[in-house]
Length: 136
Image (cartoon, rainbow, N blue to C red; front, top):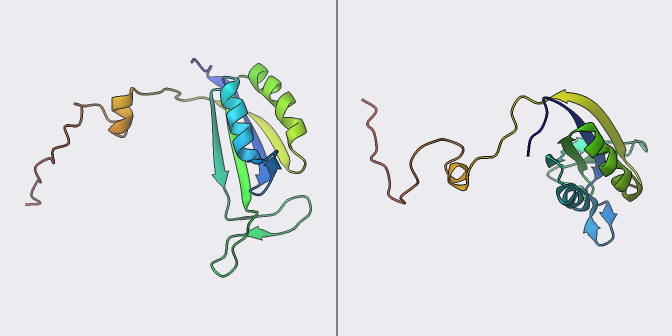
């Protein structure tokens, strides 16, 4: 898939406990984005935040929140995000959606072998340990 240099970023701020049917809302949104051929989506879990109701959600050692902040970032062309937004807006009962223009620096996928090597080019892994180099 080709992504133009000028694209858009859709950010969706919701709570971790938000649902769409029996599925977590963040999962439903990402799966829908994938079905619609969107260039990419990432879910980020926050450690602290608050929203329109000013209720503080936090991950503390002694008090684990069951509704931590979730941010879903989705990147693609304007028209594709328009179509996606029309479908996901009714799914979100409470939260915040923002949108901004972004400049795409790099968008590429490696081969399966490249992904297994952590993105580094080189020979296929053989399963044998490489000789250890001395520090001297």
